[in-house]
Length: 140
Image (cartoon, rainbow, N blue to C red; front, side):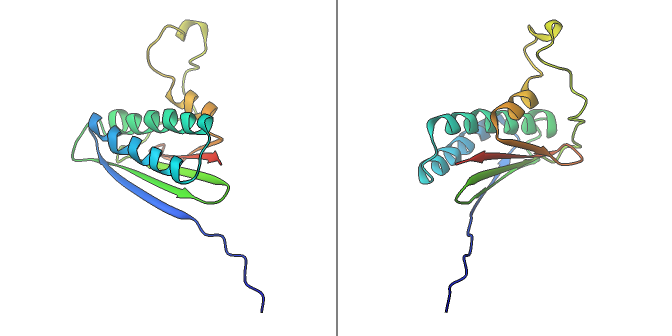
């Protein structure tokens, strides 16, 4: 009898209070996943940058630094990719109507580059309709 070719994936979850210190357990999880799945240096750097950005945006802009609100981080790993999903409890935002951070008049601004960074460093970046959840894909 032939065995079915079953794809299995590994799941990880973090529930982070909306405070700056929550970045520490996030970074520990990124390192744990990268080590376990032998993620290359470039992909690791891109994941670390994107996830720090996405989670800090969720904490600051989504949940307004309300420690009673949670940022949910889910990770699914299979043989070809790592998918990180970051969800906050805020109302979301219109990710389709953001100012271009590369426009000459915006180059000296200190904020407004988060979504730009996510879209350029992740292999795929997908927001839900409300804009309070982002899914980031990284090939491994």
